[in-house]
Image (cartoon, rainbow, N blue to C red; front, side, top):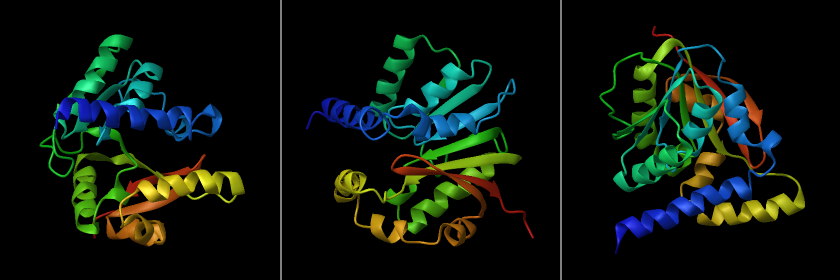
Length: 211
């Protein structure tokens, strides 16, 4: 298989979310995440498992004084992101090819860390490793923003969401049915509050204090 073309197809599929499920800007998780990032100068934001880079590019455009770092282990995905960055002439993004569970980035160096539609695709062991790395990288005063799918109650939206569920891995159902406060506590974080968006929710987390 031509992996470059494969990732181009996957990348286009990811980007379709923004013109289908997230097309209402005011109810989009992208806008919710942006609202939750302070407008202070010289912040550092890390987008773990950045994928096609939609979130990190939007943040970088809206917060030109903020340094955004996008991390992904896929060289092909990072090529897609890099192409977008050059096309949009964004200058405050740095891309790193790293495993999200072991980035080798400096400890406590980020004010905000993003995990968008990642945890439901992981086993609990994999998720724990990623969250431990996020905790290591996050400043004590920083926050972790986790975006995950959330089933809708409206009939039409339930039909559309059914397509999402069919495409997700088998562990998605178990993940979605968990008590998120307890789940995040096992991961070393306190769930402070949740912002509900179209088909998704954005959870705002703080590191648990060491005992």
